[in-house]
Length: 257
Ligand SMILES: [Zn+2]
Ligand SMILES: [Zn+2]
Image 1 (cartoon, rainbow, N blue to C red):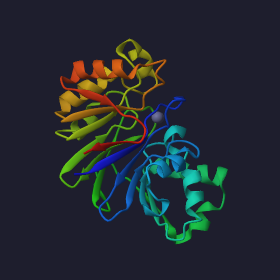
Image 2 (image 1 turned 120 degrees about the vertical axis):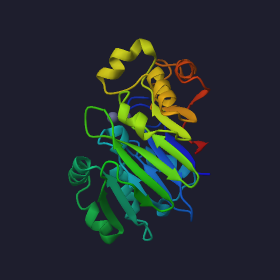
Image 3 (image 1 turned 30 degrees about the vertical axis):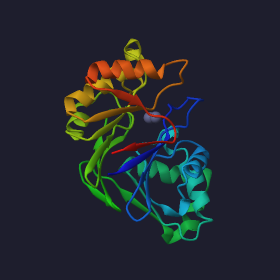
Protein backbone atom coordinates (compact mmCIF):
# COMPACT_ATOMS: atom_id res chain seq x y z
CA UNK A 1 0.00 0.00 0.00
CA UNK A 2 1.34 3.41 -0.91
CA UNK A 3 2.07 5.96 1.74
CA UNK A 4 2.18 9.75 1.69
CA UNK A 5 4.27 11.88 4.04
CA UNK A 6 2.60 15.24 4.58
CA UNK A 7 5.66 17.47 4.82
CA UNK A 8 3.67 20.71 4.85
CA UNK A 9 -0.04 21.27 5.44
CA UNK A 10 -0.52 25.01 5.99
CA UNK A 11 -1.80 27.83 3.81
CA UNK A 12 0.69 30.48 2.58
CA UNK A 13 0.58 32.57 5.76
CA UNK A 14 0.13 29.80 8.32
CA UNK A 15 2.81 30.41 10.96
CA UNK A 16 1.99 27.13 12.76
CA UNK A 17 2.64 24.78 9.85
CA UNK A 18 4.95 24.36 6.89
CA UNK A 19 3.47 25.18 3.49
CA UNK A 20 2.40 22.55 0.96
CA UNK A 21 4.64 19.60 0.21
CA UNK A 22 3.88 15.88 -0.01
CA UNK A 23 6.48 13.12 -0.24
CA UNK A 24 5.64 9.75 -1.74
CA UNK A 25 8.14 6.97 -0.95
CA UNK A 26 8.57 4.82 -4.07
CA UNK A 27 9.52 1.18 -4.41
CA UNK A 28 13.31 0.90 -4.38
CA UNK A 29 13.80 3.70 -1.86
CA UNK A 30 13.42 6.75 -4.12
CA UNK A 31 11.05 9.62 -3.39
CA UNK A 32 8.45 11.46 -5.45
CA UNK A 33 7.92 14.99 -4.16
CA UNK A 34 4.83 17.12 -4.81
CA UNK A 35 5.40 20.85 -4.27
CA UNK A 36 8.20 22.36 -2.24
CA UNK A 37 6.76 24.45 0.64
CA UNK A 38 8.51 27.83 0.76
CA UNK A 39 12.08 28.84 1.47
CA UNK A 40 14.36 26.36 3.19
CA UNK A 41 11.49 24.78 5.13
CA UNK A 42 11.50 21.88 2.67
CA UNK A 43 15.05 20.93 3.60
CA UNK A 44 14.15 20.89 7.29
CA UNK A 45 11.01 18.84 6.71
CA UNK A 46 12.84 16.30 4.52
CA UNK A 47 15.43 15.91 7.26
CA UNK A 48 12.76 15.51 9.94
CA UNK A 49 11.08 12.81 7.81
CA UNK A 50 14.45 11.06 7.22
CA UNK A 51 14.07 11.42 3.44
CA UNK A 52 17.56 11.87 1.94
CA UNK A 53 18.06 14.49 -0.78
CA UNK A 54 19.84 11.95 -2.97
CA UNK A 55 16.66 9.86 -3.23
CA UNK A 56 14.40 12.61 -4.56
CA UNK A 57 14.06 11.57 -8.18
CA UNK A 58 10.78 13.22 -9.19
CA UNK A 59 9.27 16.60 -8.31
CA UNK A 60 5.84 17.75 -9.45
CA UNK A 61 5.11 21.47 -9.04
CA UNK A 62 1.35 22.00 -9.15
CA UNK A 63 1.54 25.78 -9.64
CA UNK A 64 3.73 28.82 -9.22
CA UNK A 65 2.49 30.23 -5.90
CA UNK A 66 5.31 30.67 -3.40
CA UNK A 67 3.80 28.28 -0.88
CA UNK A 68 4.17 25.49 -3.49
CA UNK A 69 7.15 26.55 -5.65
CA UNK A 70 9.14 28.69 -3.21
CA UNK A 71 11.34 25.83 -2.04
CA UNK A 72 12.52 24.90 -5.54
CA UNK A 73 15.57 27.19 -5.59
CA UNK A 74 16.83 26.03 -2.17
CA UNK A 75 16.21 22.39 -3.14
CA UNK A 76 18.16 22.60 -6.40
CA UNK A 77 20.94 24.53 -4.71
CA UNK A 78 21.19 21.85 -2.02
CA UNK A 79 21.25 19.13 -4.69
CA UNK A 80 24.35 20.65 -6.30
CA UNK A 81 26.28 19.35 -3.28
CA UNK A 82 24.88 15.81 -3.70
CA UNK A 83 26.85 14.06 -6.46
CA UNK A 84 24.38 11.17 -6.79
CA UNK A 85 21.37 13.51 -7.11
CA UNK A 86 19.30 13.10 -10.26
CA UNK A 87 16.00 14.96 -10.43
CA UNK A 88 13.22 15.40 -12.99
CA UNK A 89 10.90 18.37 -12.44
CA UNK A 90 7.37 18.09 -13.87
CA UNK A 91 4.89 20.95 -14.31
CA UNK A 92 2.37 22.19 -16.87
CA UNK A 93 3.73 24.34 -19.68
CA UNK A 94 3.38 27.91 -18.40
CA UNK A 95 4.46 26.88 -14.91
CA UNK A 96 7.62 25.27 -16.31
CA UNK A 97 8.51 28.57 -17.98
CA UNK A 98 8.05 30.60 -14.81
CA UNK A 99 10.05 28.08 -12.78
CA UNK A 100 13.00 28.56 -15.13
CA UNK A 101 12.51 32.33 -14.76
CA UNK A 102 12.33 32.04 -10.98
CA UNK A 103 15.66 30.22 -10.94
CA UNK A 104 17.23 32.72 -13.33
CA UNK A 105 16.08 35.52 -11.03
CA UNK A 106 17.04 34.05 -7.68
CA UNK A 107 19.89 31.57 -8.25
CA UNK A 108 21.29 32.11 -11.77
CA UNK A 109 23.50 29.23 -12.89
CA UNK A 110 21.95 26.52 -10.77
CA UNK A 111 20.64 24.62 -13.80
CA UNK A 112 24.15 24.56 -15.27
CA UNK A 113 25.66 23.45 -11.98
CA UNK A 114 23.37 20.40 -11.98
CA UNK A 115 23.84 19.79 -15.71
CA UNK A 116 22.58 16.38 -16.83
CA UNK A 117 21.53 15.58 -13.27
CA UNK A 118 18.52 17.91 -13.72
CA UNK A 119 15.75 17.24 -16.24
CA UNK A 120 12.43 18.95 -16.98
CA UNK A 121 9.23 17.47 -18.31
CA UNK A 122 5.95 19.12 -19.28
CA UNK A 123 2.75 17.65 -17.89
CA UNK A 124 -0.13 17.26 -20.35
CA UNK A 125 -3.60 17.19 -18.86
CA UNK A 126 -5.00 13.68 -18.58
CA UNK A 127 -1.78 12.02 -19.74
CA UNK A 128 -0.37 9.51 -17.21
CA UNK A 129 3.35 9.76 -16.42
CA UNK A 130 5.34 6.96 -14.83
CA UNK A 131 7.47 8.23 -11.96
CA UNK A 132 9.31 5.23 -10.57
CA UNK A 133 6.72 2.84 -9.16
CA UNK A 134 3.99 5.54 -9.22
CA UNK A 135 1.84 6.65 -12.15
CA UNK A 136 0.76 10.30 -11.95
CA UNK A 137 -2.09 11.79 -13.99
CA UNK A 138 -2.66 15.58 -13.91
CA UNK A 139 -5.94 17.45 -14.30
CA UNK A 140 -6.39 21.19 -14.66
CA UNK A 141 -8.12 22.65 -11.60
CA UNK A 142 -9.82 26.00 -10.94
CA UNK A 143 -7.40 28.22 -9.02
CA UNK A 144 -7.42 31.36 -11.19
CA UNK A 145 -3.94 30.55 -12.56
CA UNK A 146 -2.54 27.42 -14.19
CA UNK A 147 -2.68 24.69 -11.53
CA UNK A 148 -2.94 20.91 -11.64
CA UNK A 149 -4.53 18.36 -9.36
CA UNK A 150 -3.00 14.90 -9.43
CA UNK A 151 -4.18 11.30 -9.37
CA UNK A 152 -1.47 8.97 -8.08
CA UNK A 153 -1.63 5.25 -8.77
CA UNK A 154 0.48 3.72 -6.00
CA UNK A 155 0.41 -0.04 -6.36
CA UNK A 156 -3.07 -1.09 -5.27
CA UNK A 157 -4.10 2.36 -3.97
CA UNK A 158 -5.22 5.46 -5.85
CA UNK A 159 -4.68 8.81 -4.14
CA UNK A 160 -5.92 12.15 -5.48
CA UNK A 161 -4.45 15.51 -4.45
CA UNK A 162 -6.56 18.58 -5.24
CA UNK A 163 -3.73 21.12 -5.12
CA UNK A 164 -5.32 24.59 -4.78
CA UNK A 165 -8.79 24.89 -6.29
CA UNK A 166 -12.34 26.00 -5.97
CA UNK A 167 -14.81 23.07 -5.91
CA UNK A 168 -14.40 21.73 -9.43
CA UNK A 169 -16.41 19.15 -11.38
CA UNK A 170 -13.39 17.96 -13.37
CA UNK A 171 -11.65 17.12 -10.11
CA UNK A 172 -14.69 15.14 -8.99
CA UNK A 173 -14.42 13.10 -12.18
CA UNK A 174 -10.65 12.74 -11.75
CA UNK A 175 -11.12 11.51 -8.17
CA UNK A 176 -13.73 8.89 -9.06
CA UNK A 177 -13.55 5.96 -6.62
CA UNK A 178 -10.13 7.04 -5.29
CA UNK A 179 -9.09 5.32 -2.08
CA UNK A 180 -8.00 8.64 -0.58
CA UNK A 181 -8.73 12.25 -1.53
CA UNK A 182 -6.37 14.87 -0.12
CA UNK A 183 -8.24 18.14 -0.61
CA UNK A 184 -7.47 21.70 0.35
CA UNK A 185 -9.75 23.55 2.77
CA UNK A 186 -9.45 27.30 3.18
CA UNK A 187 -12.03 27.59 5.95
CA UNK A 188 -15.54 27.03 7.21
CA UNK A 189 -18.71 27.59 5.23
CA UNK A 190 -19.12 31.12 6.64
CA UNK A 191 -15.88 31.94 4.78
CA UNK A 192 -17.14 30.56 1.47
CA UNK A 193 -17.21 33.91 -0.33
CA UNK A 194 -13.58 34.64 0.54
CA UNK A 195 -12.49 31.08 -0.17
CA UNK A 196 -14.00 31.08 -3.63
CA UNK A 197 -12.77 34.62 -4.41
CA UNK A 198 -9.21 33.50 -3.64
CA UNK A 199 -9.55 30.33 -5.74
CA UNK A 200 -10.01 27.95 -2.81
CA UNK A 201 -12.61 25.61 -1.30
CA UNK A 202 -14.31 25.35 2.07
CA UNK A 203 -14.18 22.22 4.19
CA UNK A 204 -17.79 21.52 3.22
CA UNK A 205 -16.84 21.89 -0.47
CA UNK A 206 -14.09 19.30 0.05
CA UNK A 207 -16.56 16.97 1.72
CA UNK A 208 -18.99 17.35 -1.17
CA UNK A 209 -16.25 16.63 -3.73
CA UNK A 210 -15.28 13.48 -1.81
CA UNK A 211 -18.90 12.33 -1.61
CA UNK A 212 -19.65 13.01 -5.29
CA UNK A 213 -16.43 11.27 -6.37
CA UNK A 214 -17.16 8.23 -4.22
CA UNK A 215 -13.77 8.57 -2.53
CA UNK A 216 -13.01 6.15 0.27
CA UNK A 217 -11.43 8.66 2.66
CA UNK A 218 -10.88 12.42 2.86
CA UNK A 219 -7.91 14.26 4.34
CA UNK A 220 -7.99 18.07 4.56
CA UNK A 221 -4.86 20.12 4.02
CA UNK A 222 -3.67 23.66 3.12
CA UNK A 223 -5.38 24.95 6.24
CA UNK A 224 -5.16 28.42 7.74
CA UNK A 225 -3.73 29.02 11.21
CA UNK A 226 -5.93 27.70 14.02
CA UNK A 227 -6.87 31.22 15.16
CA UNK A 228 -8.62 31.60 11.78
CA UNK A 229 -9.91 28.05 11.25
CA UNK A 230 -10.17 25.45 14.01
CA UNK A 231 -9.09 22.09 12.57
CA UNK A 232 -11.76 20.20 14.54
CA UNK A 233 -14.45 22.48 13.12
CA UNK A 234 -13.09 22.02 9.59
CA UNK A 235 -13.22 18.25 10.01
CA UNK A 236 -16.78 18.43 11.39
CA UNK A 237 -18.06 20.48 8.45
CA UNK A 238 -16.37 18.20 5.94
CA UNK A 239 -17.73 15.10 7.68
CA UNK A 240 -21.27 16.47 7.50
CA UNK A 241 -20.92 16.93 3.73
CA UNK A 242 -19.01 13.69 3.09
CA UNK A 243 -20.97 11.42 5.41
CA UNK A 244 -17.83 9.71 6.69
CA UNK A 245 -15.08 10.57 9.21
CA UNK A 246 -12.60 13.21 7.99
CA UNK A 247 -9.17 14.08 9.31
CA UNK A 248 -7.11 17.25 9.01
CA UNK A 249 -3.54 16.55 7.92
CA UNK A 250 -0.66 17.46 10.23
CA UNK A 251 2.93 18.24 9.33
CA UNK A 252 5.08 15.10 9.07
CA UNK A 253 2.00 12.89 9.37
CA UNK A 254 2.14 9.67 7.35
CA UNK A 255 -1.08 8.54 5.67
CA UNK A 256 -1.82 5.27 3.92
CA UNK A 257 -2.99 5.45 0.32
ZN1 LIG B 1 -2.14 28.64 -4.86
ZN1 LIG C 1 -1.39 27.25 -1.84
